[in-house]
Image 1 (cartoon, rainbow, N blue to C red):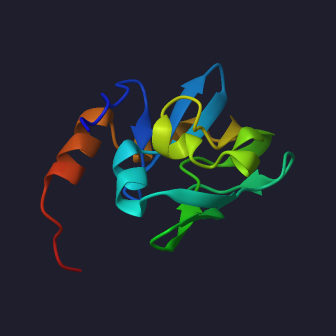
Image 2: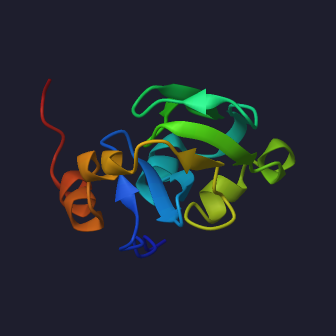
Length: 134
């Protein structure tokens, strides 16, 4: 299956989370590459609405048939929405990681943090490069 185009207006962490910001509200998810590495996702644990998240700090977990992995928030702020569909249909993350498979929406407390994240082109270069030791 061909990898869907990476949205050029998203920013990425080195841990494969993405954020798309519109009017101070960031929609957060995991990349196509990440869901492909994880395999079939069976459960996702996310913060509650109203919770605070910190940039690059753990915000939840994703469980797949292969492993349990931590999820890290690409931005700091308050959780304004959680994708409730994922509790019954975690496979949406596999099927549509940049659309219906979004995880949370965050009201950004530090818009400048976006500058610390990778652009789509930088992220493509990261996942295209062979894994380096360390």
